Length: 55
Image 1: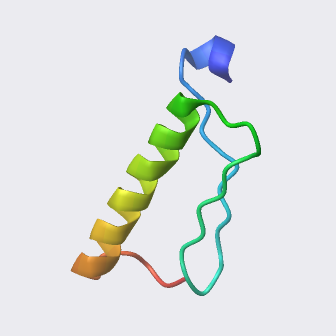
Image 2: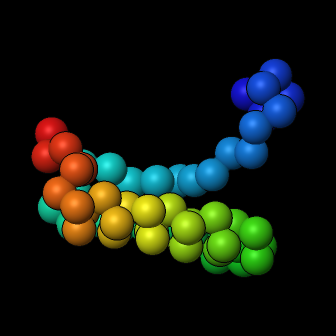
């Protein structure tokens, strides 16, 4: 997908847990840490606003 769309892959991301979980692999690069931190902030903002679906 990276080659086809020119997008950057971020993950792995765990979903379906009772609380948000953000996982980084051992030896993750700085860009990976920053990307996951950004996802965590956005996730927290959605939860604070109550706009996250509880499926």
